[in-house]
Length: 334
Image (cartoon, rainbow, N blue to C red; front, side):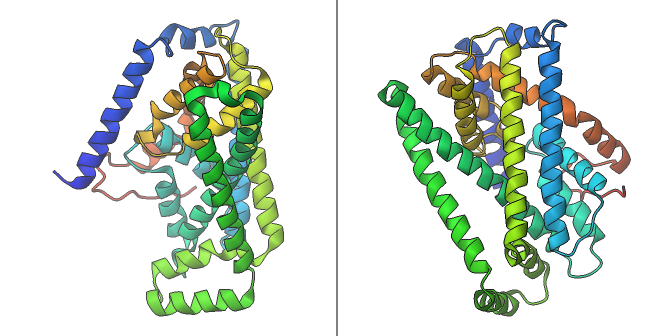
């Protein structure tokens, strides 16, 4: 048995244990989720779904902007489709094929020369998305610590760690982008990569990754799209909370807690972060006096899956993707 198989089995086992714990502890109840989709409460889920689609529209606009900066012109409609397909693979088929991998295969197949730029740009796109999550989580952590302080109990120490790590990551990212704007540094890095990697896929991936540093305007616009994405996701979570029968923290506190939950939920401890995100949400909202956090973020996962399902299923049908990871994924034409 390969190390990769063992690692995947451990992550899957952890996800099952976390889900089992949440149900046994009463933090997750199927009846609560069913209640959200009853006719009287369904408008909340529909509104949340619309906000989720709007957030992904902003994310697609960010990716198109970065692709254009890297010299890769792709129609917005296609970029949005790839964004939804990526969400499908990340949420519906966790641990099989990553959504970024699918996007990378498709976009790289479109490159006629200097193949690899799109792969680097996808990484860059992820970094801009992460930057917004870090900024929101940093502000939210400061707010929660000032408002609740010692009342957070065991959650207080992880929040301090989150604040420290988020601030360090933001400073490192900002320093890298600002230094990358300097022509002398860019030439030095480019020369070193050229000597080390030659005319290879990895060299052009690094070239794509550095493409946004050419323009402060592009960086600012990409960050604004990231802010819009994050704000729309937070608003969608709050709308879902209004449709659940369980009591949740006040809106501002829920938005702050959700920002931190989004950050902790990025840790790839389980396939697709299933179980782990709900566990973090349950613990976080419990510290604020509510037992509805796990159910809220499970509902958020369900809404996201339902929204991206049409694009994902169409991609599977048209591409005839093998469910065996040993077989390559073929990109389809729009």
